[in-house]
Length: 170
Image 1 (cartoon, helix red, strand yellow):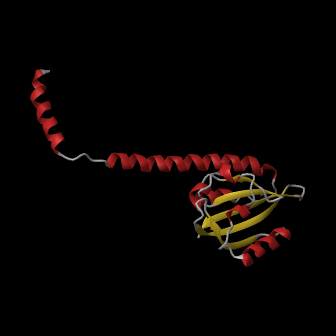
Image 2 (image 1 turned 180 degrees about the horizontal axis):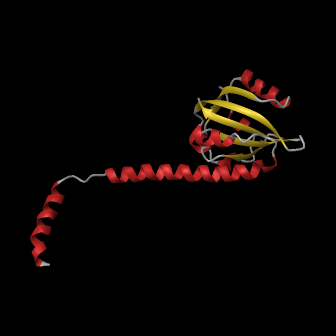
Image 3 (image 1 turned 180 degrees about the vertical axis):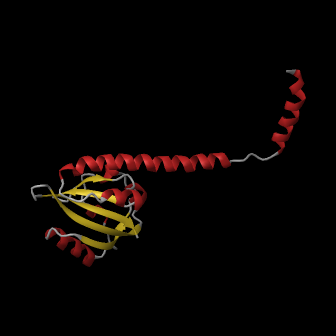
């Protein structure tokens, strides 16, 4: 292989004289992020299918999650969060594990409009759907405007079992 020695030496000098390019790594990162979202969508859809099996509720969460990229939060009838999709972390800074067991009030704070909170409370008390935009707080206590579409969910016997909310940073 002595015939390639001169070529190898010349190419090594050339490559040492030019700056390194980082482009392939950024394309890997883009692919990795896309793959991460696809895996999370699949995992979230599988979890939602299990949770909603006994519901008397139209299956709209697929469109909300995949196409609209909404965050989906499910509470029990006592308004404790029982499930949140993984994309909640991007919107609020909280992981799903950090919000489960808490009330959605954990996202409220000083700048949250009391009138809007009362509209939500009245709809929940009357077991009615609601749609509002409200100032919420991230984990780092910065604010964001959150558009929420919430619905009461009943089982096949008509008993209130959950609330489901589709949320997007507005």
